[in-house]
Length: 635
Ligand code: PRX
Image 1 (cartoon, protein in one colour):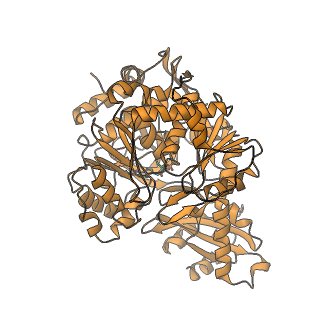
Image 2 (cartoon, helix red, strand yellow):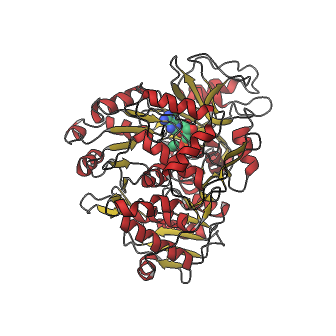
Image 3 (cartoon, protein in one colour):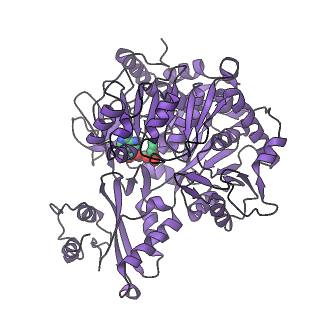
């Protein structure tokens, strides 16, 4: 029996059972029947959960772009692969067929090779949501270079850190980017970042906004003339199963961002399989994921997963509010979108606006709607289900992470009955467990525990670039023998999972993962700041927002607090990006600390939330009196 495309609940249970009883046989068949290989594997899986070593499809040889593009050419050459919807609705959409995509990727691959990029080199991509972004990603994969896409909302400093951490040789960027009514000076940001990146030898620049920019002689090249000269054919590099495919940075609760490394064969098999089942993609569907390719959702479910299935995937350059709050629904109507995948923060923002924005558009093409990035609260779930899905499209609440490569827990449309706020059941091959503080498995229902995975799946990250020890410590030591997700979850009586949120100092703001430590580091650089602590608190639209408690030095004492707040947020914008700005900043004379000097964030979280009940035992604090004082002056 084939399990590549799950048809109904019984089929799912059979697949699931098989995948747990004999995971190797399960993945062997999926990989064997649905992809093109130069050589098949000798072993499906070897692993060591203690050492965090995973080897999937050992011995196999492949190129992921042969699977994303070449193999579709005979049957789907004239089918739209990428449908580009520009920021400005007056600008025409572009339909890039599989044949055209082949040629564009081949040209780009040839240009990269002419620039001296070879297998294993790292390439930084800092582009807006334009077709060249997907093309660059695929061109890297074509030649075996490791792409590191940095979200084009990150600051120069954040870009610099990421370029240097993975030692990128080249940067692909644009003269600028359009986002709603704004234009963003991407090239200027790259120029600033590169002042401290001595190893970057060349920069390729896409013309998008026609902004005036400076081109550094010998380093910067306009991309188009190079593409015009390049051949439209390219022989793909032959890659081993575990050769690196890409690095993507994600925030940690401490220290610098973690460059999660994904490899070739396992990631391919997993993203293709999950895309097919979670979105139930069928041949003439037009699938749209509103994420940015700068995040994992875009990697797995705008580029790789859809193209591996020969799908039409939409790339949207703009924002949901431009030119008005009906933009998403206008696009759904215009391109007759069948699967629509977005984030709860977008849903909450749109739900606040007049219902006419939705109702003025024909959404009857929709078949499946999805959510990702953070827990979707009940109100948002119902609004989405009632007004967008019209109660006829299953709403898939997909839970996963940058680290997991693909979706792990989600309903399958027309297969799994949905339940608001529950991500529901694990996908075949995924074995979640909930663990208590004593490291025992929780068997009871409705008890929150640490969500872990007790068996590997093909799409999981293999390491943190340059720091395997950190990978091991972050994910595989808290619960030995298991992968710890960092999330809390509970299970209901039928085995559905509900994700309750992060258990560490990562806060998800508008669907973006933000570690509090790097933001504190940024603030502490302000000359008037002595110390700071940041926590998340619930926010109507963003899900969470950031609350900063800041102790000033004497030099800051006489200063206008509002000016200081502005300066602190400017510093954060410079160091990280505007997404990490603080919603509220309270100046405090001290922070509640334990006797060993650790800040009691639990108490600060409660104060930020405005929940003054049950602070727990504060008598052991070094300075219990401070709690009252902070509480009194809460903003
Ligand atoms: O806390 C979980 C939350 O997002 C975290 C992963 O963030 P990131 O690596 O940026 O990837 C986001 C896109 C996959 C998780 O640890 N999260 C993601 N999806 C959900 C979610 N929380 C609840 N429900 C979800 N559906």
